[in-house]
Structures are given as structure tokens and as C-alpha cells.
Image (cartoon, rainbow, N blue to C red; front, side, top):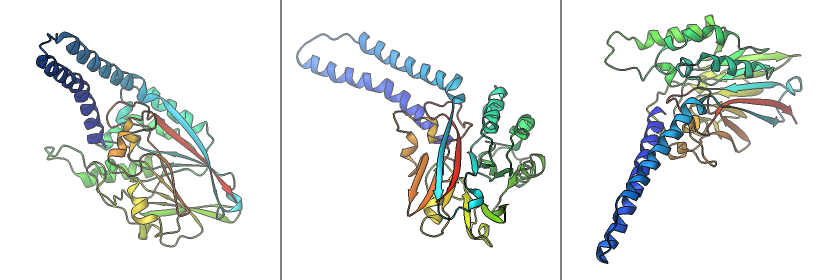
Length: 330
């Protein structure tokens, strides 16, 4: 994910320099053929102006864009939703990447307040609490503890949560211990329902829904280097009735869920919509089949949340997102 966004920025910068110079060369060649004198300066200033504009846009994305917040609300209707859960409100968040907020922790507090303001029955977090290490979470624990829902917070581990991007020259680093610390932080310190190829049931008036959660599961070669730890068959053992799947990587939905299970609703993250979305287009479409928002196929639905945090500290158009899903019995 980080690699794709960095490539996008570098490609944009290269094009803004290359295009005016290529045009200048073509015009210069034509001018030479017809013995016209052609000054270079206008094209040089054009290239400079375009590059300066690109850096101004990136500065906007750093100082303002990365903390813009969209609260997207939608209603999910299904015949199997129990009557007792008609109107049940789920807040879906993803990809906190807590180092995003190190220079501005008040923004994380603002996001948490916005989550709580939705009065959720359940909060579902679909992975990537950190980017490179569990220590990123420690300065933000008290803020995270303020996040509340009637039935608690269900979470899973994303690819970054397995600490696979730590610099390999760090010989003292033990990845298994780091993942165990992150596991303990979510379960014991924050009190979240961390689901690692597991599930838990919520009951109301004798009726129930089941939340299923898997470790990061990649079913394609899409995106940046990732990890495949999810075990859906294990996670769904003993479950029935209306079920919601939490899985970080959206490729898992097409790879193992659609047409192979009867799980009606899947919640994902991971793509960030490349943190760039202009006029409905995102560079994430270069890499991912499914980039952001809602997808429906064969009566099954997936929603991809573009996340609250960043891997590169820039957002342009793909604003941080809180998704509010209200279940409706039909």
C-alpha cells in the first residue's frame, strides 16, 4: 500500500516535468524544420510551475487533507437479520495507522468523538492499528479507550499488524513477540473483541448475530507485499444465522466468500483508495479489483472503508472515513 502511493506521487511528479518538455521538444523539432527560432524559457517556466503546483497540492494533502473526515451512512437490508436487530447500528472503521497522529494527537481524539457521536451498538475495526510496530499505539491508548459502543469493539489484525515491514537490519527485533504484544494490547488493555480466525455472538431477546473475524488473508497478488494468515473455515466453525465477516484485505471476499459461503455482509479495509481520489477515480484501481465503498454480487455485500490513518502522510480526495451501517430486517 505504501509502495503504491509512493509510486503514484513519483509518477505524478515525473509527468508534470516530462510532459511540457516532451511538448517543447516536438515543437522545437517542427520549428527547426521550418527554420523558426524557438525560446526554451516559456516551457521551462511551465515545467517549474507544474512541479510547484504538485508540491502545493501535496502540502495541502499533508496539512489539511489527511485529517478531513467523511461520515458515510447507509442502510443494509436483509431477510435474515433477526427482528431484535432491526435498526442495529454498526460503526465500521479501519486502518488507524496510529503513527499518523503523532504530530497531531488532537485529530485522533476528534475522530474518536465523531465515532462516539454516532451512538453505535457495535464498532467494527478491520485492521492495521499500527504501521511498523506496537510502540506506535502506546501514546494513544487513553484516547482509544474512550471509544465506546453498547456491544463493544470487534477487531482483527491487518497486514501491518503482523509487523512485516520492519527494517530487516534490526537483528534484535522479534516479530512474533511484537504481534503478541499487539494482541494483548487490544484484548487486555483496550478491552476489544480481537478475533483471530474466531467469532463471537451478540444476543438480544433470545435472537443473535455472529461476528466472524480472520487474520489478514490475501487471495491475489494485488497490492503491496502482504501476508496470508487468515483461516475462514476455522473462523466460521459453529456459526449459523445472520453473520458478518471482518477481513482486512478485500481480495479475500472474491477469493473465498462470494459464492463459496452464505455470509451476507463482509467489512474490509486495506486499500485506503490509495489516499487519492479525484472525480471518482483512484490510483488504487491500478492495483486492486475493488478499491472503496460498497460492492454487491450474488446477494452478498462487501464494504471497503478507506481508513482513518495514513501510510504516507497525505490524503487527496480519499478522506478519512467513518462508516455507519444500520441493519434493516426485510
